[in-house]
Length: 116
Image (tube, rainbow, N blue to C red):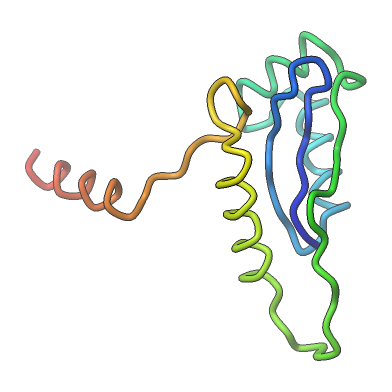
């Protein structure tokens, strides 16, 4: 479990993600990309044009298991993902992630929708 990236070795653009099952999530992303159904259009486009061999799947930060078998790692993994997103800023020209709206931006959208 932990945070990982899919890195384009040609242009160094990255897609950052996390999971409590990193190998499983990497396999799902690879399958979706090979099937042409990956949610991120820019990454899918580059994958289609440049081929799988142009990309590298890398673990950025693993999360070590604790002694407590009932510990819920999901929150830890999500916080680490947010830290890596903040550090790498993989948006636009830097990467393939979609920038998440801040709390204030979401509230502004709700207010604007109510006015319609």
